[in-house]
Length: 482
Image (cartoon, rainbow, N blue to C red):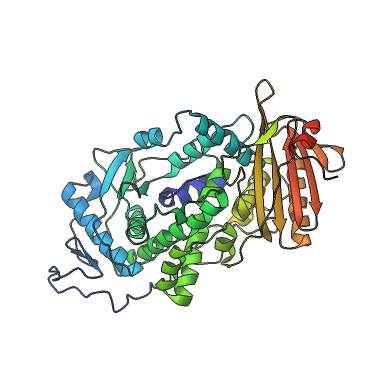
């Protein structure tokens, strides 16, 4: 999936409107006081003799600044705005910036063009075909839809700004680049990413994984850290700190809107922003910021760890390809041809199909059932809880005239009861899609975006789903064990 950074500002508002949910109302608690490491500014806010925590680029964290965004930001105003914001990030995050983080502005149209997809090379085509099967297996995008386009459209509709580790720069997206404005929360959030990059190097291999679930897990830490600081900042703006007012009409997002947004993809992308701050809050509350720093050395490996704040690691799934009659995997994609979608994406599958097709999987209204100070949405549900691991292998058959596709999805669960619960909910999705049973454990969805044949079997704690265009293809993609 490889989607990172920048969604937080518009994300909540867009999803609330489109999903018809109510935002949780929470009474903010007083923000934690700064530690003794935060320097105290002199009465005249003169610069310290050396760089100290709470002062950056000529500005103290509580220093008054003259910034009026009603007619856009001048270069002088931007420098003051960013300098003080960096000092405030230091106060909350208890880390020193090593250098100034540059901020530039790009139009939303430019951003859409940059993120609109690849140039159609053979490798990009293979990836697109592979990734299409992943999202189709999740019943989020159908056979006539391009998942990469859906991801790009969803992302470009919601992103207000992002930090680029390759450029070491924050890019603010706006519809009015000639008179830009920057929302406080966008600036704070992306400055945290700049701070992370300076201390941990976000381009390091440990933060980039080959699976969807692995990326959601690392983003749970990275985005959770930034979102936690962002929310701490919002609380201070309501009390101890004077904050720059952002004109309501622009809000730093430049009129992103929600047109064309795929809610299933959006809710998947948003999971690190929702559960990540809770994960980070648990670390800070129990062990301090040092525990967060340690987590950046060994990031979480599954969305289950972020959702449930657990150290439980995925079980191993061994898989031997036995396809025949022209069916083959995509060995250059993912992990040896497979993806791992994980608990968060499985939750989205059940939520999305309940909402879109009326599948009796989960009550979609429980998305808003949260009780934590930093939580936005609830990604825990019986059919996806108890996840042990999964590997999803997309297949293709290029011997047919137009090329045909299928997949094998092997899922492992903590207990037999968890496996049964997953199978029951998955069967409910097939029922909602008007699937017809053709043989034992074999079903066909006769028409629509997900028209295909399916074989769903359970053995102990394992549920295996085989998908293909026709019933006869199922045994070619995954022959039954003799």
